[in-house]
Amino acid sequence: LITPQLAGYVVGFLLLDERDDGTLTALRVTPLSMRQYLFYRLSVPALIGFAAIFIVIPLMNLIEVSYLKLIPIGLTASLGAPIFALILAALAENKVQGFAIMKGLGIFFLGPFLAWFVPAPWQWLLGLFPTYWPVKSFWLMLDDGPWLVVAAIGMLYSLLWVWLLLRRFVARP
View 1 (cartoon, helix red, strand yellow):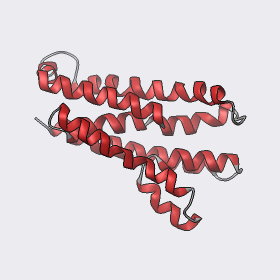
View 2 (tube, rainbow, N blue to C red; view 1 turned 90 degrees about the vertical axis):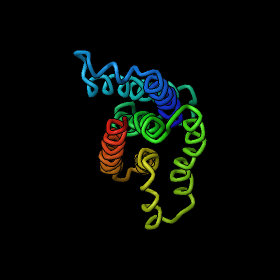
View 3 (cartoon, rainbow, N blue to C red; view 1 turned 90 degrees about the horizontal axis):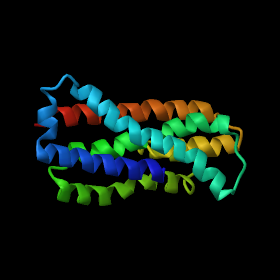
View 4 (cartoon, rainbow, N blue to C red; view 1 turned 180 degrees about the vertical axis):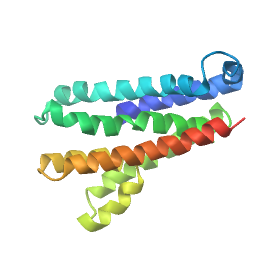
């Protein structure tokens, strides 16, 4: 979860910087549409976050996990990058506000942390945090539970976050 978060912060601040400099306004008159540009900007950190999973887990060498099973979990976790980037870009007016929002985004890691201590029926409420779903899916994979279903739900929920935040970002002047 950390690598997509950090990559998302970098892109979020790039988007804030480009908005402050008027670059995003200038993009509107180029053949490249805003949608294409944002797809490029948001997919690169998601790909970095996805690839990092296959680097970090073997480096930690704590458990052996099938790489094939990590693909859906990695896709779900990597959607954190565009979420964090768009939260910064859609909610902050400038880079100073962006730093304040970034500090507050640590609350997103309460979901997976608290889920470890909250009993099963109640921990699903922590699914309001998009960071909960890849972690829950990973735990279920280790316990031979319905991890693939949870990863799919998390992916859809994260895509909903991205869509809502994209709408907010594009609607801003």
